[in-house]
Amino acid sequence: MSAKQRLALIMPFVWNAYSKPCPSGACEMLTLILLCVLVSSIISTLLFVWMVFSLAYTHFVAGTVTGVSACVMLVLLILVHPLRCVVTVTVPSLGTKQGRKIILSTALLYAITSCVPNITNNMARSLHMMKCSAGNITHSMLESSNVPKAALRDIRNTLAGLPSIGSRDYFLELENDVDVKDMEKSLSQVSESMKANLATLHSTVGQTSQIVKKIIAALFVVLMIGSSVVYVNGYLTHIKHDNVYQSHQLMEALQRVGGDVTLPRSYKKKLVKTSGARMSAREVKRGLWGMLALLIYALMCGIMLGLDHFVYRSLQSLLTWASDIPDIQTIVHVQMTVKGTYIGFIPHDIQKMDRKYPYSMSMLPPGCVQSLSAPEHSVLTSVCTFLTIAFFMLLVEVFARRLRRKVCASFYHRREEQRTQYLLWKILDKRERPEGSDDS
Image (cartoon, rainbow, N blue to C red; front, side, top):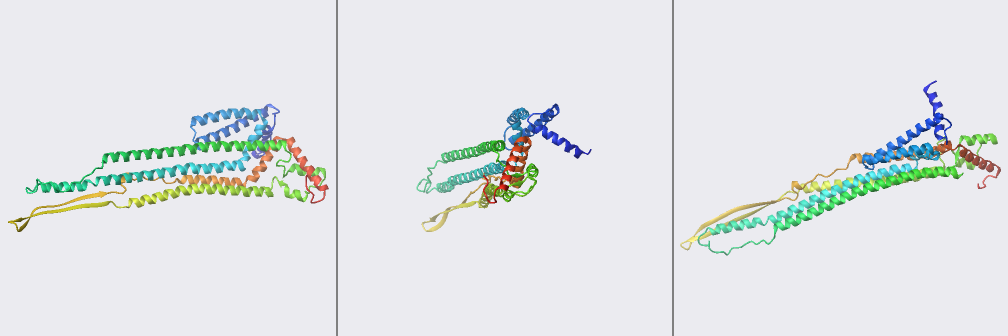
């Protein structure tokens, strides 16, 4: 017997032991326990990886939560048959609307939590450079008062060296009532206040994004499990719930009752083959709405990524433009000649002064320049990967929904027979009534 044949014999036994309400023997009980251990281990491992690498929980917190969840889940899976059905139905539900919501929300949150902090960081660095440049310009302007003061001091010293006018004090005095140290202190206080506000804003944005990310992640997990619970409950309590499939059991029942497996025209359009690729009008409509939702999420992710790149490129261009502004070079050139006469009419030069006082002012000193944080290419790659997964999930959503019904049918054989008998009765009733009459 080949391995494929052995597997074909083992798998029905394993699935039967797992889907039964109560095991009928020790072998089935052992198989059930092993399968529940495997399922709880896989779910706990995925939960741990998600909490650590996506939701930024510590290893201790994630390990504690997943450890307790694994133990509780293992006990409940072994003892509670409907819970096994709900957990199993949740797997194909990942390919339906709720699972796609988790992937799309993860993509959007990843884009937000990666782009918003980078944007605020670049804005903070740009404001710091502007503050540093303004402070340097203000300081340079205050220091520029020393240039004319030095020139006047040299003129006074030169004139004081002349005996004939050394005792006279009639030339100009430059007064400066500006307290440079006090103004520098005020500028420093304003700078520190702005830096603290930006740091607080950056920290608040980061913490808020993480909290929102955790809340939305927990909400979507609850919704996904809740949708599975609602589906199983509807399957068990409402005979019409998702009962639109042309199953093999239904065709066999038609063959046994009337010998004719031909369906009425209205049911040919309404019923969907469980093994076929044909989609009903409702499934097509649901797929179009899902595609629209996918495009909206992709647009929002694109806006966030584009805004991050736009802010970075704009600020980088402004930084390059500001760095190319040359320093302002100023020279105060003082030329002074004191002339006199011999015997009252012969002119001659008594004293000469020719000095230059250079002065420069930099618009953006090298100490003020900070490199900007470029957008990470891994963010774009990750978001595109999430969106691609969501697109493929949309393509297989129809088959995931059909698989959900098959899972429920394997867990509740008697209920599936009742649903099949209901469809059989509706089809037979439709055959007896005239074409075009409404179904009740």
